[in-house]
Length: 164
Image (cartoon, rainbow, N blue to C red):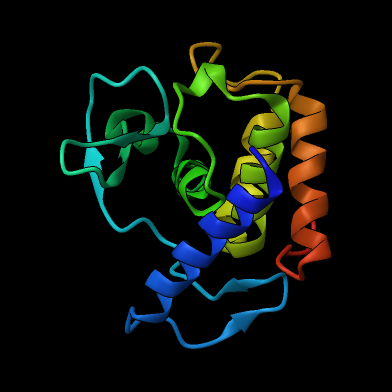
């Protein structure tokens, strides 16, 4: 995308957010302090992923998550749901989970590590790092690198709980 188009998209996004009653302060990275939990979520026990984001008929983006998988992985589910929502907040093109480039995945992980609940971030890092985790869980990328990047982002943003 051209820089002009990107700037125009940010202006449109910011002007819409300024009208929202939920916006109250500025994040000094240039974004309005927007909601950090998904607007809408849909449970789908048939979903093969932990969570993903999809556009519905109205044009809104919705986080879809598998409650059966979430029950198995506990608090880590919150991180993965927020990761899916991050693709919307970061204005990424909405793609199937396996189609995101590594950079987009890393950005979504870092956004979720910045704004997520510390206990959910910690649980996700533990899950991703666990070599004995359920092999049916769709954890993409290099697990050790991904876990360390999430942890580093949480630390950098003052959102990491002490290693337990």
